[in-house]
Image (cartoon, rainbow, N blue to C red; front, side):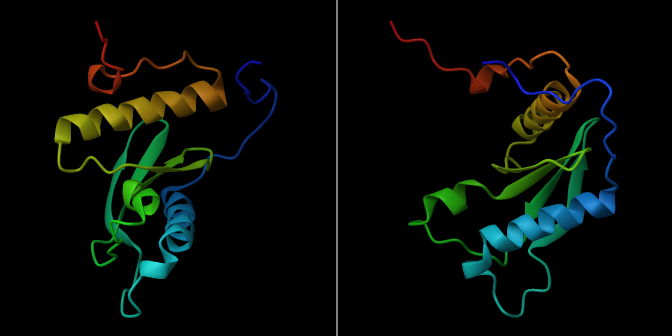
Length: 132
């Protein structure tokens, strides 16, 4: 069982920033629908980050997900690849170094999955701790 990749000859459309934001908005609206206040204009904030192969979009802080819904609470941002693949992700905005590592990791992940690039190495802080 290997990694699925697009065949070399397959042409895929690169999405624009606006298209990526709309994909993220739809995903966020679906994921957080039970928690979006009626007066909330957008489930995402304007801020985004961009790497070579993806963008990160972030949940509007007006959307409060209760602790008991740990899954929706864990994924508070959305990554969209330059080919439009969407993944719910953790928001590491509170730790700029981890956020930068994660952005680069996800960019490398999308390059690996969609373009046949090398498999990305995990940053040190994401690697499992060795036990003795």
